[in-house]
Structures are given as C-alpha cells and as structure tokens.
Length: 92
Ligand SMILES: Cc1cc2nc3c(=O)[nH]c(=O)nc-3n(C[C@H](O)[C@H](O)[C@H](O)COP(=O)(O)O)c2cc1C
Image: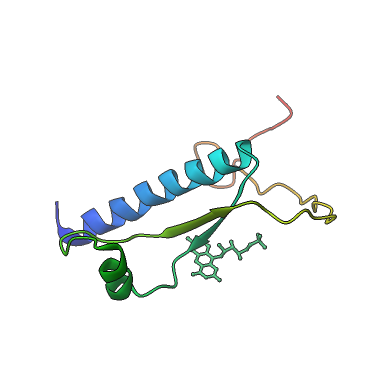
C-alpha cells in the first residue's frame, strides 16, 4: 500500500477510535476534547514516542464543568440511500 494511502486509512482509523473514546468518556460521566494543533516533534520528545511512530491526535479527558446550557435541537442532515438525492425515509 502506498504511504499516502496508509496515512489516509490511519487517519480514518484514528477518527473511529477517537469517537469511541469520546463516547466511552460520556458514558463514564466525563468530557473530552480532540486536539490536533500540537507540535508532533515536541510531543514525541516529551512522551518518548519512538521515531517510527506518528501521533494522529490528542484527546483531553476530564470532568466537565456543570452547565446550564440547553442543547440546541438541529434539523437532521439528509441521509441518501444507494444514490445521491434519494433521501432515506426515517419514518420507517
Ligand atoms: C479532529 C479534531 C481536531 C481538533 N483539534 C483542535 C485543536 O487543535 N484546537 C482546538 O482549539 N480545537 C480543536 N478541535 C475542536 C475541539 O475539539 C472542539 O470540538 C471544539 O472546541 C468545539 O467544542 P464544543 O462542541 O464543546 O463547543 C478539534 C476537533 C476535531 C474534531
């Protein structure tokens, strides 16, 4: 597999894993925040991560501040079935 393709797949894999971690955090009463803006060189040095490994993302996990904010109800994005424009009927 060419390098660019491996990087692309790794980014997708990371996204899947990160989302699972974020959901698991919520289930445990925790909060999480994805962070991509970091110096990979500096972070590898601090965490003693070997040269041949890459850091895809950091996930900060902690106890969220209690909030009174109301969740915003948004219109669901359309989901197309089999063909672009053929909207999935969510009513069943
Ligand atoms: C893959 C990914 C990487 C992110 N990296 C950063 C980052 O480096 N710095 C930052 O301030 N926010 C970053 N964000 C955004 C925050 O994680 C968070 O989603 C944003 O602050 C909105 O939070 P809120 O929904 O609680 O308001 C990133 C989000 C994603 C999905």
